[in-house]
Image (cartoon, rainbow, N blue to C red; front, side, top):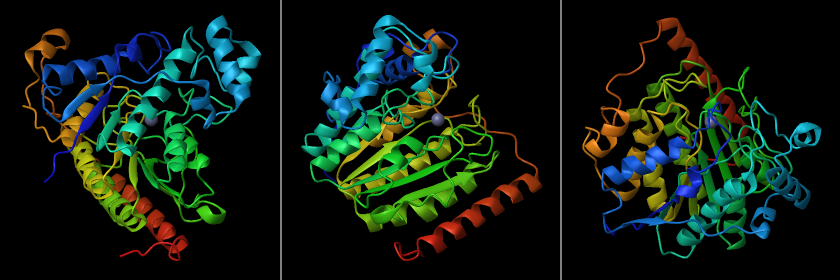
Length: 380
Ligand SMILES: [Zn+2]
């Protein structure tokens, strides 16, 4: 097989500032991932390249955001201002607080997204991983769920302008609502999101009835899961939906949001995946990316500091065709403690009635999805 050239979009500016010590989206998630990959010599392979993000421009942000919102973010970022006006644009202190330099730090993720998009669109790389991005909740004029600028939606808009059709697969534990809404009425982008059901859970959307409108009917696909869904059930549902639909759609580019907050030890959510299930998902996505010839991958959520670096290191290993020894390398373990790359343990087995309920919910949703989209997709 032909060698895949793979770009890891990174600079230490991505983790130099953030929402503050008490906030779960800690910049250390990114720093530790970069350090773990470096300790494994992941960037020494001839096909593996660390590429810094290009500077972003106001015009880049305007591919998705309103000019009013861009001005508001710039001025809040410079003045450190909060208060009523900030709330109107979605900046809630407990969720998406304003911080000094926010415009530059969050804009850099858009620069990183467009760097990756250009590399794969122009064919210099087959895969680009903007691990610091994946801010899938932000709206054109609204910050939401720790997301200020929607780097994913900006990049997809840019890819569409190059005449490329995009399949977007979002495996973050939260519904990819901002990206879904951005392309809800077009058949040029297929969005598929798998997530913990929005029942008393942010952002409260992502049910199978959200299917798209107009030309986009059938091109928004949602697969929610009840809490305590295990990875066997999750993977089986993924395999029934994602590969068949993406293959039928035959995209020019596969775009993925690879949040790791489906992990059983994630503090914000309650799905029960391990690193083994996560890698199985990445391998499925890699096969679809190989068929498309272009893969633009994003990071995303994931709030357990000892899980995120391992999960994204494993993901990068799949992307770049590298297998890393399971024992964490000394350069990393001396700083953060010893351990293994894959989970050594898994979640406690659930009671049979829990498993029966999570399974029945998936089966019901799959039936709804299939019946609503049978004129658009061929289901096995
Ligand atoms: Zn998330």
